[in-house]
Image 1 (cartoon, one colour):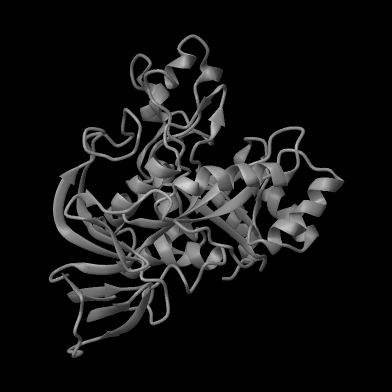
Image 2 (tube, rainbow, N blue to C red):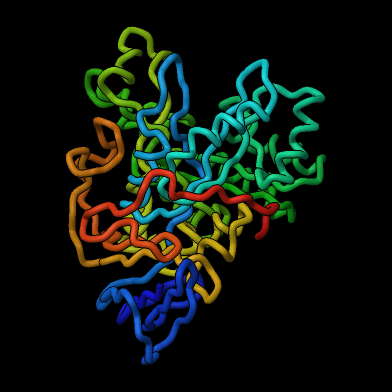
Length: 397
């Protein structure tokens, strides 16, 4: 099947140009102006941006926590991601205590059979032994090429220590959900010494703060996450880090738990509040807000939301760009639409929004995955199980 996206402004990490995009079956076939194309499907992108589908490399679908599970599974979570302009996720498979990595990965492969978008896996390591060390090599051979280890919450010191350990091991290191200027300074110090040191932040650390945790009554429980929200003065430092490439990626750490029936498990004991926020549907538009506010440019936006995460985690150039031969994961984004984020209208399977009432500009109007329409005109056209597992190569930046 041939699809023509006509009359839009194609935006990649390096270029912005008025052009049409031709898709043949699952891949981008050509980009140009005035091409004589006979198409089976034509999409009008006049006055709109044509961008690569977002790549969110930090999600937690169907994650267990304290006897409960995240309220989004791979079906609802990837559907919400698609409505938000994200067409690829990399989720964290979890090793339980007392088992090897293989059992955890197999469990996540089973969960992900419901996915409506493409997906890959990182592996969370909770116990290290000879079997686990052997399995790490096996998983790398199967395209699971990144492993997560937890550190204590003295964030600035922990990031400094992580890079020191990585330096000794001779390996790149990537810090997830960085939240503070102290941690950012530790990243800068490592990068200034020439180390392969990388980090992401998340929308919550760019837009929310300690003030949200301090909301009256139990309302602050909606904003409990790890690391915790910081004072608002950290936000400008993080935006500067994104502008200067000391932070390479914005991912979500999407881990939704309902306010009623899950977050309120901790009403009498703070430690029982499930950690995590829902945001996989909001990342694309919230980050575009950084363009509107002058924090980042349009090409840098595409780099942060799609290209850099695809490169960082071995998916580029198949994902993360619009170029001949790349997967036709495309977002037709209307920057003129003004709307309000609300749990009443979002598609995440959770009963609140961390950004309730925030006014934003921009809407992922039409979203394609490998040439097939996932979202158009507010309707979902994907199917559970259509998402494909993506074996990833090693880090590539």
